[in-house]
Picture 1 (cartoon, one colour):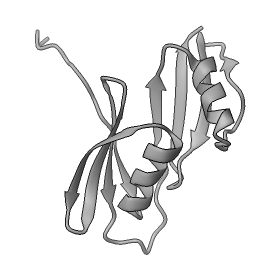
Picture 2 (cartoon, one colour):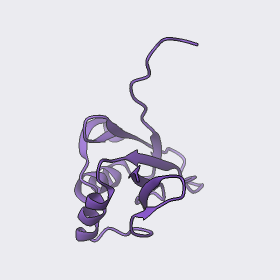
Picture 3 (cartoon, one colour):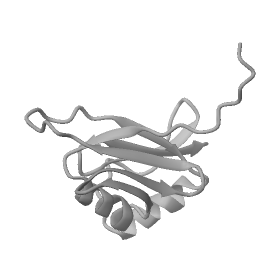
Length: 122
């Protein structure tokens, strides 16, 4: 086995409109937008915290619906984040729940149909 240490992973989510996606992640979810590429833009990176980044790639062929992806984001205080998002009026599937696998988590959809699950060890 390699002794190389893995440092970070970032999902690349397909989206229909990069500008609307950037706006949603920045204004609704509180992410910073670190990078936007293209003129007009077709790729972007949003970040929250030091190590959580989500990348977006605008689809060229929008004739078929997006296949939803699920991104699991580990946080220090899932209840506080849920409260923050509740105060902003964000649609969520349920409140934070402690799961039998030892995680306390909640999930919400983004505007492209992807699922974001936020969780912490219970």
